Image 1 (cartoon, helix red, strand yellow):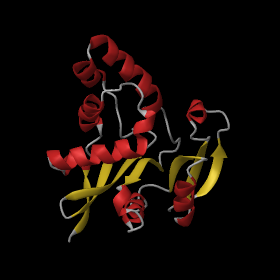
Image 2 (spheres, helix red, strand yellow):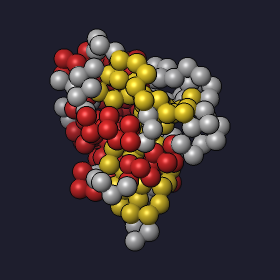
Image 3 (cartoon, helix red, strand yellow):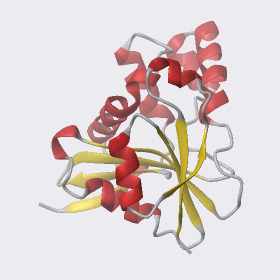
Image 4 (cartoon, helix red, strand yellow):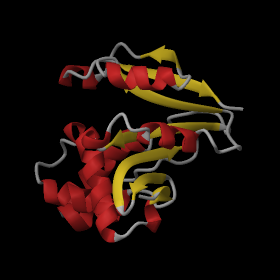
Length: 194
């Protein structure tokens, strides 16, 4: 079975749906802006950046997803027109503003810094090198000097994964609203790739 990494924009509609499913498996508990799962899926299919999301495919099936950002752009943009179209004028405007306060905030400062915004693999295909292949893809961009990411302190598997790939902790945010949801506090990690 052929294994490839493709840009999100080059996927079929069905593969995009699989990618969104993976995203919601990994990050859905933080997407509390709506209880309507179907609407959330419709939204994410449209707002993932087609060039900055990468999907690991085994044959035609999406088994991994990674979104990358820079100091100038992030891979998830809750565009107001899309949010309003899906959720209505008032709720859509509120969702766009609140979610972009997080998802469009500057994640890295330097022009030569890359940021792993999201990385998730199919729970049934873990420990098969999918996350490592996506990590290798992130570290292959020669125009960047370092790759950053952020994980929550209670996600010991993610911390171990990144440490295994040469990341070190560079900053701990002890105060976080997400800590109240039981995720722990954010830890920023860095890997030098130049």
